Image (tube, helix red, strand yellow):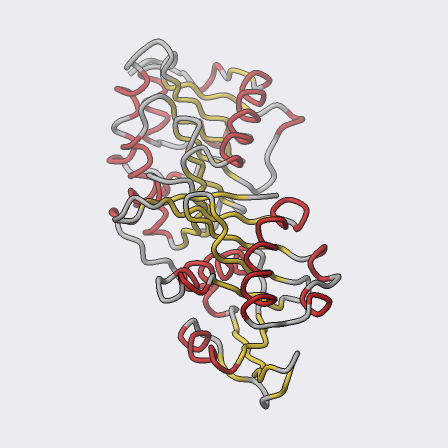
Length: 329
């Protein structure tokens, strides 16, 4: 799978990030590595290309669609072939590339990363959180030091993102980890405020503490905005939901044709995962709907598109539950 994100810098240069297999983005990665390792550092081509390329996850940065930086993560959780074009070093590209690799590693549950750093750039890796783990040695005639980083503790820490950070993330195609109850609550409120066409949630059950009165308040006006507006919820456990005195249930009872709630079809019932879709372009995923770890996919990320299509099918197959409507308030 590949993933993309783009941002504009002050001189209107477009920075794009890609991630994927060698088959998917290898040609572009090859361009950067050839210039840096073969041409600049005079490493023999037979030493540069190996069997790890075919089985590794590759990361790539481009400026205005021109490849400028690359690295790979092997199945053994080792970072390698980390390269930035010479004329673009010192512009924070290496930091951005490493940040994407670390985020990917954390999402995959990787506990420890290793790399072999050329001694001239050991300081760079130390600033990214790596520590020296062995003695200096020569590889292809260049001095190296083994380094490593432990990721386990950070996986359990809450993220510290502001409202401005959320809005910035929503403005570009991205994938961001959001963790911590307060962080998730704030993000949900932000997402619902940004909704212009639709809000869709699919979950095993309704977790009321994710949705405050303030976050739910825009839903009814959104649902009535125009004929194509959609506010739709699919739950597996609708009986338990009917027994809760939640504000969402009250909204549904007040306007059942606008705030729609259905019971998941047996074939499409989620186990633990929950998904919140905003305007079919922003997606918030809980791997476990009762936990505080989520992934945000923004600006029509292909995962958001895929889940939007799946939700439409699940909605068609889901059943209307009359006992939820009760007496209109």
